[in-house]
Image (tube, rainbow, N blue to C red):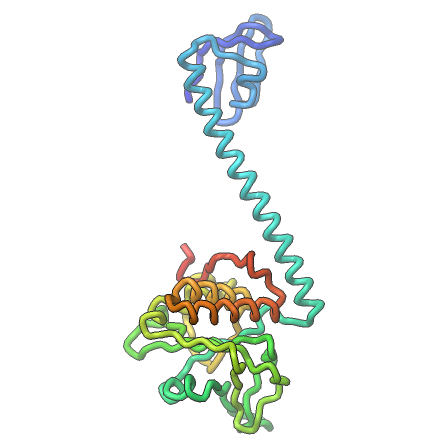
Length: 280
């Protein structure tokens, strides 16, 4: 708002004219001196405009800035609280010896796709070389607190269309050692299968992001990769919102509650997904 050459009255210095203005300060020329004041903070407290129409317009500007300032302060508080909660979560993970990315996501091939929801188990593959060649390729972070995320990409679709088709918790008796067949068994209760229509709405890259390359959406090689605990909770939240059947909603809610308990997460403070597909 342009206030140049407007007449004002100051509580201490008396009458003056505004001779300079920028976004943060105004300079006022009084009879015997020139003073600089913070804009618009000085108005209403120390300075009054003589012109009433301009004063009313400025009052609206100040009110809008106050709202903006309050919103900014709110965001700062929320960010501080988020950082404090994140620090607390990391401390809890450390105390419970839980890795912050102890979930695992698999890229299923056609054969696995046919059997995974019958057998409810999947293989991380075999070691391809070295003295342990042929032995099961055991993911080191896999434990009973881990969820197994199942994804597919149709041959005629780009990597950005990779879909989440289901997930399950690792069996609660799992010790970290794979059996001779190298399969990762599912928990007897916590299992979710998505319909084709639901899977179309659950894109993997809405959740997964490489923090070093946030816009990268590539899976060049490898049977599996590790997945952040919070991302898995975000997926479960979105599945709950997606499901229509009351029984399936309850099953997904129970899954989320169990998952958060096992991974020391606050179920009521799960941030919104911000994967590679959501990066601006």
